[in-house]
Image (cartoon, rainbow, N blue to C red):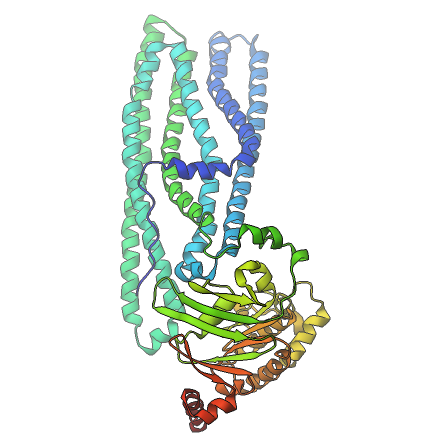
Length: 605
């Protein structure tokens, strides 16, 4: 088995160019960040002032035994409680707002880019990679740029505020307290590096385990028929054992880190108690309340130190997420409209339909060449002239160029040479969205979206009425099985149409194409995955809808293209034979051999 490994987090220094692009998404949210930052500043000041309020009570109420100043203490404490509650609410609200809005903006722009990217992008990019960008990467970034930045600000302000107050109150005790800071920084860096490294390994192993789960479930039948249960179990056991080892290592480092920080804090506390205690009891240079302030500040000081180490590690992890999601958002669109075309026809998201002219269906290839990014030349100086309303069948062995031709007509790819004309004009003179609006495409492997049958047919034309949906279903004879369901057109099809047979899904996809009323119809081996009875239903619908439309049919079963106006026999991207069914049969060439072999095979079966 092979698995996709999770990409390793970047180990380089912060890439300011990447973060500058990410922070650009923060500009519309700056008011929330500013308010949140002011709340954090207020929280830091309030947190620093809390031990000072208690010192007032210790020195002026407890030490003297007088309750004269108790109302002042109660008032100060009441102000503190109301202030901190208000500031905490303000901080949480604004940080949460930043998190939600930022994730929304990143995912919106990434999804918008995915709508614009051509087929070639999806050919070379794993779906799992795209899903990770849309989910975990956008979540990581929104988390660190909302809670992380504000927490980082609070931690720094707390450390600065505590240091300033300690230095003002008593220079000697302040220096004693801060003397352990270099050791604290070293320990934090040491442990965080090792914890981060261990969690990276866990993430990699988890990715492999997820892949093993996926292959084990989807390939269960193959596993059982080949008796591979023991081998698969051993592979899976090795993966989980490695993850267990890395998890234990991470747990050990994490378990040691916090007690080590507490031990260092305890050293500082002991030093303060020792030297401060002598100053209070022997030299009487300051009060018990002042000693209490220093002890309190030690606990408050070391908490943000630990937090800052964690946040900086998360920023380093998040840089990998930033790089990957920016690479998606800024991905070059290989196939795009020119500025002049956009000005006239609009974009995918903002089409100017009022400027869209009708498409009649003339298709011409002029010396067209095409080559995929990795692979041999598919088409070279290919010429073809199809008039509106003609039905064209494409026949040939795998790799002959059939799918490439229809993909070029649909402008899923651009020719590497020559040009394609639609109604006598170069394809690039009109927008991609204009062309796709006039196309109907039925795939060999039909895909349905989660939802009802009614919704799936209506995807062909979103403003279609229920009666129009039912009429389209009737034309392809899908109504025969739909009306046998309890909920008929409101029947849920399941994920990917899992509750329907292949033939039923194909008929629904046919109805979806028909309701769009396309001027150019593409049928990509649309009958190869269905039974003979369903094929008859589809064939009946094909004959009806092809009338008056330019149709390109990639044929697997040659019996379905007998009535095509033109049959093109392709080999290595070239037309080796061309004509009607009867003309090609009479010639006794390649088409004759393909047809008779398939016909004979059908008789043998």
